[in-house]
Length: 340
Image (cartoon, rainbow, N blue to C red; front, side, top):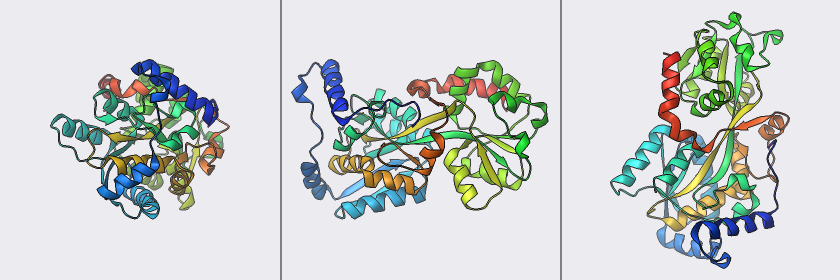
């Protein structure tokens, strides 16, 4: 991805060993990656994997089916919910010591909260050494699996090429009053723009009377139906999917493009920890990342290409702060202040 520092596997291994020794006061030799052979042996005895995820059903089934092709002795199941409600569920189960989840695939913002609440355990998948350092938690609590980029989607029947916005300020043009749509739960987008533009930007954007909705799918459907002319915070992959289906959609990337990561983690006190570690490692392999590409997401590994990555590489990106999730109440207060 644009602006990401590239490091060699050897550099990353050295970095991980050094950071772990600092954090835990251990010798460098005490830090080791998971032993795949031992995990396979343990997973055969466990025979099951329960995944908690915010991904949609089709995506989960694709990933798990590819995982079962490699490890057919593991039966898989998943629980799916929105990222905010899934975070609440995991924290509640952890608080009451109801341990059901093995692996968790969730936005990094929520994963970081789970880490700080003690709801995750460390894992060091061997394939993580092929990722740039920004995509691994040095302490081993999360590993990025794919990225999500936020763009402006627009209805080509309602927006002419000459009127397509080029900057975030262009969304404030009076001609768009009453013609904009917004997805309410894009915490990453709201938080990053709040940091970049300040609260005054949202005050001006609110004067455009945007239509606030919940749920990416419904927002895209309403955009296609002409309920509004532009969806100002659409997922990039959704726009590409819509175009592939010949819907009257196009997209434009406003710089800096807001980007955040979805990560995989080992749940604390997982009933099937070996299977969970195998699954996390699988997601980071070339075959796992290719499955990510197949469902339309942007892979993390630099040696796995994708249409998304190629289209985004020319833009300036702004990665959402990892601690944004802890400021959710504050950010929601800003959203509620201006958008009702």
